[in-house]
Length: 111
Image 1 (cartoon, rainbow, N blue to C red):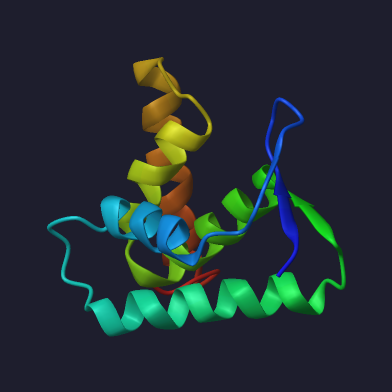
Image 2 (image 1 turned 180 degrees about the vertical axis):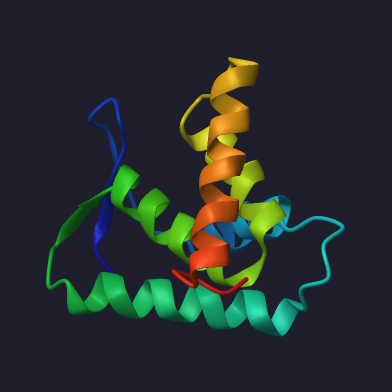
């Protein structure tokens, strides 16, 4: 697995447990089984390995998590995205919800 490059430039080893915990936290109290979380983590890891990169930026992993959550659960996606994008403005939060609903209704993704 590639090393993870943090926002501040620090590097750390990839940690599957940390990735799983982040996804599980977004999915807390949502009707998604641990097996489906494992499958999502497996797909993210596969994407990381197929990238062929020795180092990968943490924001790229965040993007992969967002994509996985879109397919798992809309509410979990919104939870994660609100933290990931540091949304503090209620109007921006509402816009994000509307965008997620539009994408779901257009069939861009299935929760």
